[in-house]
Length: 531
Image (cartoon, rainbow, N blue to C red; front, side, top):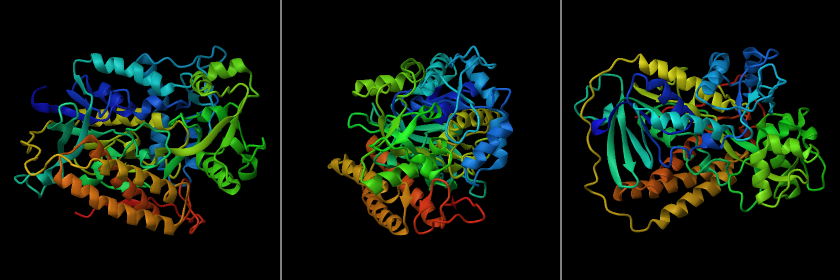
């Protein structure tokens, strides 16, 4: 694979990127670039499982219905049907790859299926309470030994290389992507990658918030790169806040799975009183947006630092068997979930919007695809149904693989090298750390679970000031990984605020005190960059 020239360049090493690589590698030379280690993305952190209609008393149409209800009128019905109808095949493909799911000999499927908020039936197949880790470990073994797949760790993409950056490209033709500039973090060198097709699979943007269940890698890289390249972006106002992130000073980003409530966990105030029945008839099994807002309401009303999730009424052996990771982590921190409740708070968890694609993962830029949390397919609507995320990664990666395999091989132009002739080393990198912290704090305070127009305007003003500083840095100094991530976070924050200000209603994950009602007609918020 000479000169960093590939059939397909995949930016990101989560479930979507891995799945696509394995589907393509039979016929294509594939390169995966990932900014940390290959297993460091959010996919490995997924606890709950993957939603699929596997049992005789379930069906894709029931799965569709639950997804549409959770999505608050904004799901694309056609894409939702496509993904749910292909869910079972996707699960069987994972099993063929060596993924071991939790078994249940009494079940007709042979697997234990759990239930999560918003689902009308048990349909979540899982591997204990560490499904993402089990899936990623199985796939990475296949990836690392495949002769047609090159994985480049500690490489962070800077920007896409598009036809409008080439002086000799005929601009009467449709705009096209030819690859990307990538920073080799260890060599501190910018490389030029050329590819027939480029795929954004970098995950979401939850690191734009101070409190998140996501790893440090979730900085909206693919969404920001797609936006800068001219792709349409949709529904970024819908940031899902997971209701139950462990509240402990030493438990950074540790998620308490939705399945804990699915198996009978109860949300309580410090005095032991339940509060969810006052907010929704489905109580703890209401969709995530409702549960997160209810917790936020109770915390603000009573001045609480957290609420409590109690599943100690279940047998200790049951908890250790079904939630071994959660049990062990909590015990390390002095919390015995078999005897006492778990302190929890909401935290930014999932980006429902993203780069607009069709059901094959194609963006509106030729030869550029987006899959996984980076993409907006229409599946999640205004609120993602629990455990639909890994499913979307699987089904859409497979669909993108088929589409890419059928694309004609075209000649590629010589791409210009990265120009560092007019930059120097940064002299005050502390500015980057300060800006990163400021951004995440004001996004949490002004663009969180409950919003107002005034708060959004304040956030927009601060984003504009930060952007000026960051652009000055980007223009005058050599790029670093921290600078690139901060640049992408500011673009992602800007997109979230822009979309939120355009939505004059409350729907799903977007709740505005100034517009508390839901409009009769649901419409996507679509942004198109001016060129």
